[in-house]
Image 1 (tube, rainbow, N blue to C red):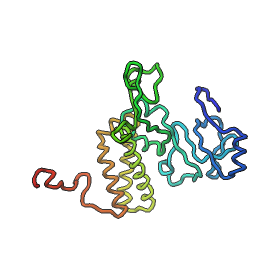
Image 2: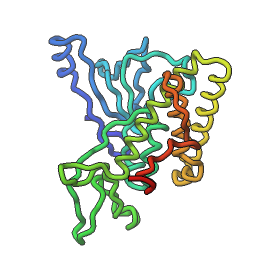
Image 3: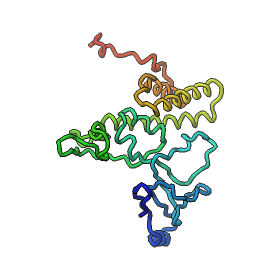
Image 4: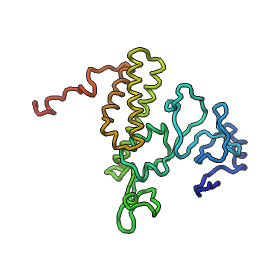
Length: 258
């Protein structure tokens, strides 16, 4: 176990353990969560070998990690033979609005270690508190902030608003990947429409990084609807309706029929 200057523990396998598993399964790779600020060797030929000589298959670190399609240099991104994800240790857990959870996948690309426990926890005074707790020096507002993604439901865990936002952010991240991949072969008007969608989303992401609530004024749902409509069209699924021209509601819903 290694501790950095901030006292945050980083766990790594001991050399005898690495050697033992290398003998019984030479192709095995490791999962590791660390800050990776201690002079780790850079990945070579797409493979990541940490200090200590063990190869990593899943690398998790705070505030870093993305799929290749989220890289600014896409598609000229160096291929890698390992998964990379970021863990949200503090940011979205303590001080963010539910809408931030919808955007975190669009800014990080990948995310790991998000708990789904829904048992309520309380302070001594009876007020619900965060599952991840907060340092005592933080304000009372954040001490009472409960960022649970699930809550007790009639049949087990049920998604909270934050949980739903994270799920929608995951779906929109897959949508982003579909559009940037389609852009490689697109030409003419199709290419222009994809570029417009990607540029609008990039602007929304920049705004959201400063103040997530401001995204509401940018018609976030309309932006996502236009992206879904374009992606469906690229996949060969056409519709006469769009965000500005929704399907006509059945008369029974409007009260005009039986």
